Image 1 (cartoon, one colour):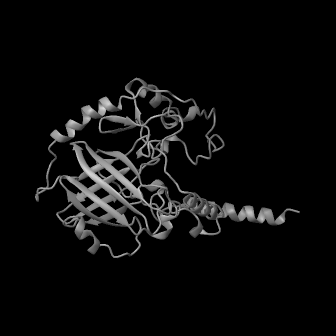
Image 2 (cartoon, helix red, strand yellow):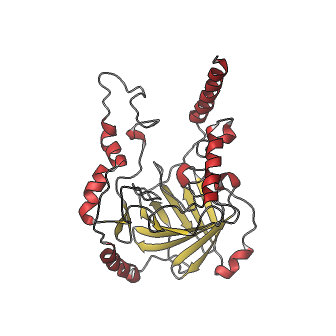
Image 3 (tube, helix red, strand yellow):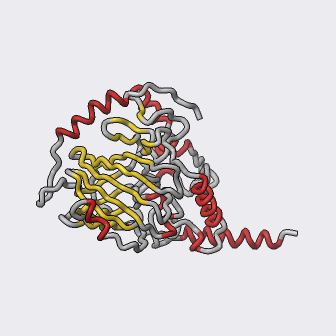
Length: 335
């Protein structure tokens, strides 16, 4: 793809944005804490890692319009990739790049992520290249897991998203990432718990809030869980959440891989009436050569959040397994 050189406005825009946070007074709950409650979305064409076509983290104002209009997901949503059914119905042969459905069914967003006043080409801010710093061992472990899932020996061998265990693309996290559709979250907050309802696949992160980081160790019970085991505490108006102990299948399938030595730290800060500034740091000496960090925005949207009933009518998994058995039979009959 074409590489776009750019002039970065990051220093100027960040300097303009930071005072807004210092001056902003967030709404508060009855116990005086900054309120994170509401319905939010991280829908965006920005993704976790930076594409090769972008040289810098911050997208300048001069290039924003052209880069947005040229983005494949924006083109897809506006034109359905210029598909023309002619006189008949689309039969699936028109779908490019292995797509299972056309643009009517997707909702990834149509804008780059706006974080602290700047448009971002990736959520990862450290390392500076916007890439996950996999170790040699981490890359090998990731490749082994992918190879096992491609065999389709049974439902357990397929991805967790296909099996409706958790959302695909890391929607439940942590960190909580955006994907092709269903990027909505509802946050409910009490003095001693935070609940994050993840639209896809209707998961609820129920996180105890303790009295400072020193109290967190008493809360961890080392029991592996889907979406990990999380404990939170307040640092001023920022809620800090530390997560460990992921269910092994999730930990080994990504997109954020973790071993039993890994942890993720999230930070939720109310940036404005319409936005939560979301930071995350991933640490794992097995999968990565160094800790890596990202920033994202959750933007206020209208509700409600409807149930994502993934298991109902999940014919996709059935079709995948049937197709694998057909391939096996065909291979066995070859001379």
